[in-house]
Every structure is written in structure tokens, then in C-alpha cells.
Image (cartoon, rainbow, N blue to C red; front, side):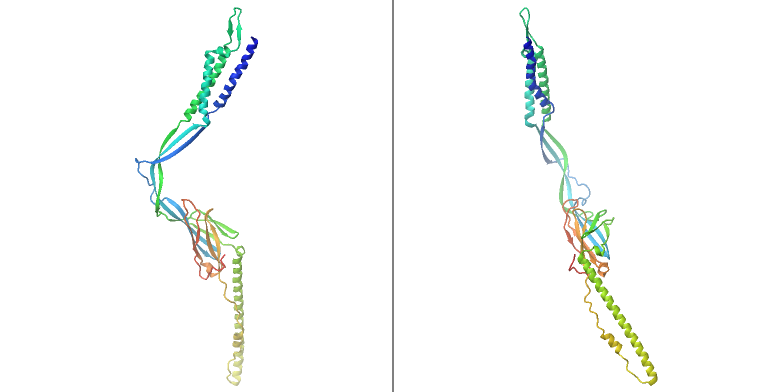
Length: 381
């Protein structure tokens, strides 16, 4: 009898171990749900199309127009944003979203199967507990008494596991229910290009950067889209520009030296002529004899060789880059030397084509620089 009772806990453990493992695996959390949705948009006939705001206010693309003017070593810019607008309507539609759900790997059906099996075993244990007991006792009258406590315990545990599994299966059934959602909305319908209400507006509050080789300067634009830059010093300019400035300065120095030499020679000739005129006046008063004026000083001046300076070097256009933002840049130019007459009134224009979309978009800079009087483009940098 003692041996039979010792085998009962081992039999109970052998029966409950798989059931407990399945319960822990499946009831520890809900099964994974895989969701797939499809969306369909159909027009509505019970509503009319909308046009929000006045026509010409829906900006579809933005470009850039720039104009600059040089005054010596200062450059003044004016930036304007060119806009393109589209005719936009909002069409009433109904958005139909169909949501399909299922459990991963058929977990829900496994929950139903295990839960039903565990519940059936638990009910058997509760109804016929002697079937789950291996311990028995024989009384003095010869009556065999069986232990029903083990059967009730096994039946109760299996019934609880079955109920838990079936509850999880029912919850997953609700979670995997398909759904259809209807939402009223408006579809944005873009029409043709129309004229904007403000096709050209100043670019206000934009930080721009002027790049000339390694040199750079950053300035903000004011309310009129204007920005002023102080151009780099001579030693910070590209080498070809520095060479042109040196050539112009050398020519100017040589010209000044030649003019000074000519002025000195003219003053010397006037001094000699004055001395000869005084000497002739003295002789005339003594002899009253007429003498011809001397032309030695004039001949000396005429005989002085003229300095050959050659043509004056032309001013030079230096190219620079005006960076608007991370996507857009524009090529501009200015004249050196800064003291040249052409550098006092040099003007230019440039544009960036409008890109797609309503925000800043990359464009191609189209140089439209206006050539100043006396400036030439050969050797531009």
C-alpha cells in the first residue's frame, strides 16, 4: 500500500508537466497578430469640391532672382524669390481601409485544441476521480477503498489550464477579427499653372555666404532682400586677380613717372627761355639790333624721347559663388582693381530656375552678368 501511494505523485507529475508547459507557453502572453491592410479611395457624390484660399496662393515651386552692384570694394546684393503657383482643388472622397488579421503560425487553433483537451481531461478527473488514482486500501471486511483526492487535484488543475487556454483562444479570436473603416476625406487635386498673387517677393531673413576661393563672408538679408558685402583684400584674391592689379598699378606708376619727367623738362625749358629773353633784352637796349628768338630750348624739349608705356591693362572680372542654402548657389562677379572706374558702377544679374515642389529646391545658376564699361572677360577667374 505504501508503494502504491508513493507512485501517485510521480504519476501526477508525469500528467501535469506537459499541460503546465503548454499553459505557460500560450497563456503567458497573447499570440502574435499579423495585420495586413488595404486602402481604397472612392469619390463622394454627396459633397462638392473645395478651393481653399484665393486663387494664386498655392505655391508649387520657388526660384531665385539676384541683382548686384559694385562700388569699389563693396558689393550690394538684392535677392528676390520667384514663385510659381498651381490651381488646386480638394475633391471629396471616402477612404476605405480593410484590415485583415491572423495569428502567426496558427497559434489560435493550437490554443483551442490544447484548451479543449485539457478541459476534457479535467472534467473526467472531477467526474471520475478514481481513474486518476493508483493508491488503494483494503479494509478488514475486504472492501477496497481508493484515493479520490489525487483525481480531484488532477481534474482541477487540468480544468484550470483548459479554461485559461480557451480564454486566450477567445481573446485572440476577437483580436483577429477583420475590420473595415470608412473615413471621409479630401483628395488634393493639382491643376494647371496660374499666376501667383505675389510672383516676386524679397527674400527676407536669409543668411547668404559669398565664396571667393578660400575666402568667405556671411551676411543676412534685410526686409528688402538686400545684403552688403565687403570684398576681400588684395592679398586674399585669387592669384590671376592679384597679378592684374599689380600690372595696373605698375602701369599707373610708370605713367605718373613719365608725366613728372615731362613736367620737369617743360619747367626747365621755360626757365631757359626766360633767361635767353632777358639776355636779348639787354643786347637790344645797347645795340638796338634785332635778333631772332632762340629755339634751342624748344628743340631740346622736342628732342627728348617719349617713354613708351604701351596700352593700359584692362580691368578684370573675378567670379565668385553666392551660396543661398545647402542646395542652391549662384555665380556672381565683380571688377578689380577696386579703384578702377569700371569697379565703381559694375552691375550684374543672375537667376536660379524654380525647382519642383513648394520648398527650396536645387536649381541651375544662369549667369546673366552685365559687362561694365571698360571691363573685359578674357582671363576671368
